[in-house]
Structure formats: C-alpha cells, structure tokens
Length: 91
Length: 503
Image (cartoon, rainbow over all chains, first blue to last red; front, top):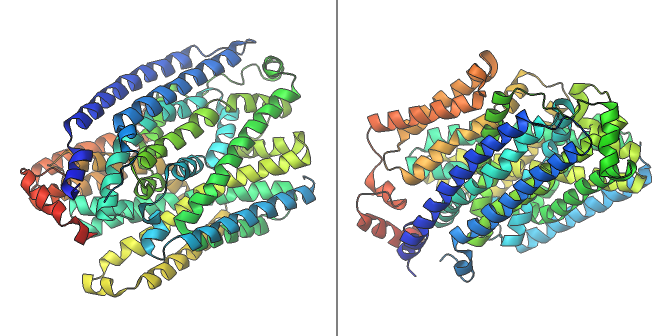
C-alpha cells in the first residue's frame, strides 16, 4: 500500500465516508433527543419520595450505559471498520 | 486523621509502583522528544483505553462533582450526562483525522496540526499553544495538586506546604523519568485504582445505611430537598454542552490521538473516557452524596469539594480509607501528569518555531529533552506556589475560561478537515474574537439571555471564522492537498509520495 492509497483508505474511501456521514446524522438526532430528555428530567425530577431517586438514578444510568455500548462501542467501532483494521498499521 | 501507619504504607507502595513503572517505560522507550511527548505513536489499545480513562477522570470528577451534587442537587448530574451522549461520538469523528494526520506528518503538539493546515506558525503556536494549551491548563494542574494535597493533609495531618511539596516532587520526577509512555503505563494502574475507589465509597454509603432504599429514606429525613435541581435550566444545559463539545479536543486528549498505534487504539480514547464517565461519574455521585448528606447535613458550600475525603476518613476503616485516599491521588496525579507534559511540549516543541529554521535544526534531541525536563520542574514550581495562595483573579479567569477556551478550537479543527476555504486569517480572527467574547460573557455580562458564556464564544468564533475566511484569499493548493482538499487529487498524490521524507 502506498502512502496515497493509505490516505485514500482512511479519508476518501466512499464506503467509509458514507458510514461516517450516517454516524454523524445519527449522532445529531441522538443529541437532540438527549437534550429533550435532560429537559424532561429537569422539569420532572423525582421529589425525593422513597424509590423515586433510586429508580431515576437507575434509569439515567441505563440510558447512558446503553448509549455508550450501542453508539460509542458497537456503532462507533463499526464506523471505523475496526474488524478490518486488526492487521493494519501505518507505513 | 487516619491511622498514619496504614496511610504511609499505602502511599509508599503507590510511590514505589509509580517510580518502578516510569523507570520501566524509560528503558523501553526512545530518547527523542517525539517519544517523550507522544510515545512515537506506539501506544496500543489497552494502554490508550486506560490512560484516557485516567486522564479524563480528574480530581474535579472525583471531588468536585461530589461537591457540586451536594450543593446543587441532581442538576449537577446532567452536566456529566452530556459527556456520555455528546462527547464520545465526536471523539471518534474528530480523533480519526487527528490520529491519521498526526502520525503521517509527525505532529507532537496540538498547534502542529493548526500551524500546518493554516500555514501559520507564530499565531497558531501563540493562540493554540500558549493561550489555550498553557494558560488555560496550568491552573488545572493547580486544582489537581490542591486536591492531592488536601487528601494527604486530611489523611496524615501534615501541613499543606509539606503535602503539596511531596506531590509536586513525585509528579515532576515520574514525568521526567518516563515521559508520556511512563505516564500512560502508570495510568493503567491509576485507572484501576480510581475505579475501585469510587465503587468502594458508593458501597460504603449503601452498607452503612442498610441498603439503597434505606439510604434514600434516611437522606429524605435529613434533607428532603437535597437532590432537587438547584441550577437554572438554560445556563445549566448550555454550560454542559460547552463542556461536552470541548472534551474531544481537550489538549491532553488531543495528544492521545497522536500517541495511538493504530485506528483501533485511537478508538479506545473514546471508549476509555466513555467508560469512566458512564460507569462512575453519572451513576455513583447520587448514591455517594446521599450517604454524605446523612453524615453531614450542613456544610460550607465552598468547602464541599472536601466532603468525600472527610466521609471516607470518618466512616471507613483505616485501611480502606488509605486505599481510597490513594485512588483519589491517582485520579488527580494522572490528569496533572497529562497537563504537565502538554505544557512542557508547548515550550519545547512550539516555541522554538520562533527561531530561524537553520538555528532550530541545530538543536539536538538531548538538549530539547533536557529543556523539556527543566520546563516541567519550572511549571511544577509555579503550580506549587500558586496552590499555596488563595485563588487570585488570574487563576479564576484561567479556570473559568478553560472549557470555553478549549471549545474555540473545535470550529478551527473541523473547518481544517472538511472546508477548503478555511484559512489563516479566519482562524486567527475567530480565535481572537472568541477569546474576547468568552471573557466578556463570563466576567462582564455573565451568561447573556441565560446562555452560558462559552456557547456565545463558540458561536461567534465560528461565525467570524467563516466570514473572514470567505472574505480573504484561500489557503494555497499545495497545503490543501495534504488534507485532500485541493481542487485536483493529482497534487495530493504528489504530496503523499514525498511524505516519508517530510516525516
């Protein structure tokens, strides 16, 4: 692989660009939805009734953890095509 | 005060491990500035994962966030939720480009990319290197040093000056021995220690109160409004966006992209920081603060940062308390180490660019490395003296402008990757106007219309950057070709056939 081919692979390859665009659009949608969720959480924060805050805590943590696993790890690594990268290193 | 024997044993064990790992890293690394500052782009996935987690998880996250939740209730948690959702996908989008160009063109400092893309050595190295990299970061080292010093002071009873001096000596010594490679290897241990420490505190809070349900019942009885959000919604939400959007280009994380061995390792910058946030900073503070409120229903707001240390010292056995104090020191030490290396790299690698090329080329690697270590000692000495004094106006400005200041680099970086019209004049005007705007909206007319000052700075910097770039001459084609933005791909092919020689 020449330097230019390597540059093309990481920066110009149509499939990679398409994956990055799709990921970026999904990221924007998720960010907007999240901002609405934060607003809803702020306005409807549990008023310290027993069970309220622990359940809220678990719910928030569940949303954030799911987002991390699905969006950052699964989709993010898929966008990078990490499986195909295993053996590669730069020149 | 904790049983000082346990504390001393834990602290000595920790120091022996830190120095041992640094010496190991020193023996296995190269003797060049590139190895000292970015490990010659050789750090693998696991090390990058752990060092990113440790760097992002600072004394601010460990102590400051607990203090914020104590003072402001649940709204403080929303700040950290923003990181989880917004920051890490951006890490992946921005990080790949910085990793690739960093490795291809041999970048060492954040300003290297900006200087190359915008063909602007002096202004880039002053604005990105000295102001954003050094001025905004140096006070963050002070915060970390103060956090560690408080922990040691509370645990052993020794004076502030002595505990601060110990921390400063340890910090500068292990950085000088191992550089970023040593810091990254030490971070593997520190990340594990700090994750364990956070979980132990949460478990103690639950155990002491007979379970998670009874914990909140007891908290409700003591302070029924404890968790109700107390910050105004708009400044809180826009402020958290500023933090979240700036994180992917924090200078300490920026150089992690350069350090990554391959694309997989680069992806682990996001994965490491992300796990630290979602597993610890979002989930645990509500539990820990509930325990703290039961123990200390009222506490001076300005001193709330110290509560977590006070809690573990008063409510856990001496050995566990000593381990948690060790984990707190780890959290602060790893962040301070990353910042110290960054500042040292700016003085060692960026500033020599003011010299004529022929003089610069005559400076040997040994001289530069020696200079880097001298700078580290000087920076730590300055931090030592600042940390012993009350926070003055300069310090307040530095800390308040840190995240907004970092965020100003975002349009410059993204524009540099994707927009061929982005040019030097746009970059300089955007950054200068952005800095003035965040100063104005942070200190003179605070948060206009309820929107955080950093967001105003970001938006206005972006507008000025775009408008001025459109009105002035575009960057030369041969430079754009390096980033695949030239009108013809032939020029890019030609440039890349010469890259080996450039590196």
